[in-house]
Image (cartoon, rainbow, N blue to C red; front, top):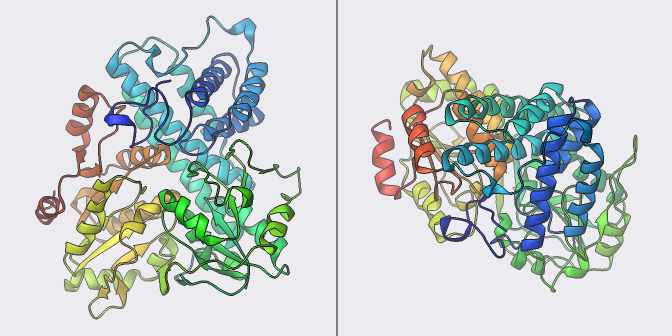
Length: 514
């Protein structure tokens, strides 16, 4: 195997025997074969709704920490191979990352593919709610096909930036799907403690899975808790209306082995961010959607016009003791674009009066590396008149700190928009501020970036930000291993992308407007 698609890849270079994420070499090789088959579909077939839906679903399964099941991946590959028009296939698609010999071209091809994986995740979530954009499928096909050809850095760069455009479209489609289905997010306080009833823990991003399980369990005598990216479910009016949606349990994905063990109840993984399963909870965890793990019960896809059947999850929960408490208190979130726009007058007045001096976008992914303490330490030393804008599980590094409010305004210093895809909200907020203050360049806003990345949805978000014209983006805790030195040089020259350094030095640079 060779894989370097996530931030924690071995030695910052690549995993060659087993993935740091826990996937085996056999699973990594199976994913490579699936990607090759999807490229062959793109080479030989015109994109249709049916084909587009299949390709984005399959791409989603190859995201880090989603599918550890070789048999499930092989089944998708067999389905993909059956869709290839062999009469139009000039030669087999390149197999594996290292098939491209030119390091710089390889770097851009992989950057594009990982952006496509992130786009596919967002497109798949929107499709679950009945929303889709055919132009996304068309680009996915065009981009996949481009990675099979001999090409140059100059030819690949425009496609990579176009992927940023498509990422914006995918996030906008998902935002519309979520808000039109469940209502616009509202500022909400979420409990962190536990109740006295058995529980079900929901982890992942799929709000339709959340809603269907909440509906099916409403009279079952169990409480439902969210975990990691699931926290955002509490912000949607139609989801938080369920009285047994009790609160949030635990933090970011990488702590799940300890937190799932102490939860005691049934656990449902709806999307990626699964880690290798421990015996302490093996008999009470379930997967669904793109997630799969050998020996773990998998909830089947919903039939056309119907709902998934979560009865097995509910019945398992009913036989479990209540969760063991981890913490107490509450979190506040729901600061998506509609809510912030409703506070626009107060925010603008706070900026004009000098009560808010700067915004710092600290969105993205969390992870295991000790170096990610950077984000907590930076949050602690930010001036009291600076506001953190966040989305994704990176917020768990600092959202439980006592950072308070902007003095005299009631505006919290941490504004949580929701999941990683809600980085779209943060971009809309920035664009609105640019309009309000009549700025020619969005980079003239009092706005800094210190993003954390782990997997491919973060890559899609980064490409979206670059396409929107944002510069001076700090990315950490390390730069992607799949970016060659020459490609990094291009990104630095065009967008001034930079690695995070230490909190004190970065703060001084931000204060200087860099």
